[in-house]
Amino acid sequence: MLRALAFRIAGVVPVLFLVTLVLFLLLRLAPGDAADLLVPDDASEAEILRIRERWGLDRPVLEQYAHFVQNLLRLDLGRSYRYGADVFELVGSRLPATIELATLALLLAAAIAIPFGIIAAIKRGSALDGAVSVMSIAGVSTPTFWLGILLVLFFSAELHLLPSGGRLPYGVTLPEVTGLHLIDAVIAGRFDLIGLILSQLVLPTATLAFSMVGIISRVTRGAIIDIAQEEFITTSVAKGLTRGAIIRHHLLPNATVPITTILGLELGVLISGSIIVEVVFSWPGLGTLLYQAISVRDIPLVTGIVVTYTTLFIFINVGIDLIYFMIDPRIRAAEGA
Amino acid sequence: MQRRDFFQVKFVVGVTCLTLILVLAIFGNVISGHDATEQDLMSSLQPPGLDNGGYYLGTDHLGRDILARMASGARVSIVIATSIVLISGVFGVVYGALSGYWGGIRDVALQKVVETFWAFPPILLALAILAFFGQSLGNIIIALAIQRWIPYCRIARAQAMVLRNREFVSASKIMGGGTGWVVTRHILPNVLASAIVIATFSMAGAILAEASLSFLGLGVPPEVPTWGGMLAEGRSYVVGAWWIAVFPGLGIFFTVLGLNLLGDWLRDLLDPKSALNLR
Image 1 (cartoon, each protein chain N blue to C red):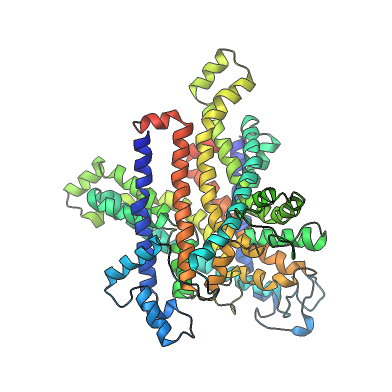
Image 2 (cartoon, one colour; image 1 turned 180 degrees about the horizontal axis):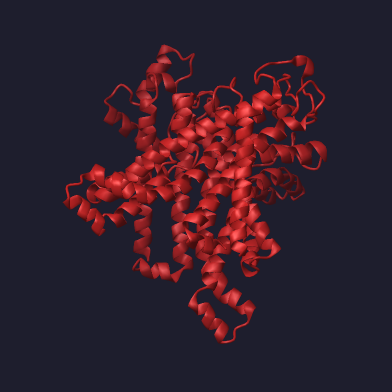
């Protein structure tokens, strides 16, 4: 088993190399001299020289690529020229906000969608089943930024129930340890802040979760229906198991693989989906940082963020494979573990 | 019997949504009588109504007619999404068909490229391209097509690998058919149905993606009215002027909904097995 796992993880390395190659080629193919792209418009001659040196732009293309990869491995893309701070330090400081938002959105979506999917499968053709179908199509057809604006219009502007954006109200501070506010509040013993933090999280989390609820419930439903047609279910009915026992011991365990798959896929989609939700709710995560970096063409920062998101994305996919190993003995067996 | 009805509902609702949007795109300006970019500050933030100087869907903060801007937005969305779907579809199908038909080392190399593009989270590569290359209509189409060809490539490759060893393909080769002949005559026609299903869903995705980019200000130039751009510009005025946010959003929603429903219907129609699974 360990060998198969090691194999899967090792497989990430070439993909990461190819990803950096694509980014490097894009940077090279971009119009204008690469050095001009990497410095602010008002940069001095000396600054441009320094950048040429840092990115190895005065050397042959292959060496430039080696240099680029080397800089990435050392987590050194220089300074963002909008913020003046080190690119990967900036990324690190914004990442927890994004992770907090995305994780909660996924949990929320799963907590709603999986029970609905199961019930819809068991009660096929019922009103609830129809509602799941409608929700799934409506969910993927609604632009998240529009939903976000409408929610703010209703819950913040109209009802004054929830804040319209940001992570903490103005003037409230929280000592950062993990960067995940809910956990930090517990560590600092500021249980009074948890309500505030949650109220800031409600709208962005709900917006982000909305599109996923439909897809996840639909996949759950499909998985359960597929399994229900298998012969071992007929057998368990024949040997007299109760409906509840069949669902608990046979249907659900077998549905975990497709459900995990869709949750993992959605976590990947969340990465990019969160960019726009963060912008709508002024959520100070990686997405807003990317948006700001693009609008001023802060190329080192854009590159750093793209590399970070993509690496996360690739590792999420590996993580899903590892989870298969843990939950499904058949996959372990097939991989010759 | 129930299943049949459900198919019909999807088809009817889907086609209705898309027809409405097409009518808006084609006749929107005729109905409104205003120009999409014409400013009339005296009548800014007019609510929708029938007796307010012809601004049936109201006006935005600069007094521009929402209906006329919606019509323009519909045209931009349709043109961009259609170009993206055509480019990515043709490229993906040909790439996948060749990869599967050739097999061997060429297939491995071509699939490595697919794997690389697929390793980027959706939209992110598009954002990087727009950041590096700047914004223009061409760049937006390239940026949004750069990952969309992969689903076509997958099915075309799978189909080509199956067909490669079938008798009628061997016969065609024995009779002197070259790669181009076999691929266009025998493989592509067999991929067409699946490709059309993918294209319908992909078009829905492309419209959402284009709207998202325009909303972020990374889409077509800001002076061109788009649904995403209307939402972005009107955002600060929506409190007290709901129509600024509601109508462009509805435009996106109904277009994407119509395409998704039509895609579902087509998939059920062309592949009864998947319909059975989903029911």
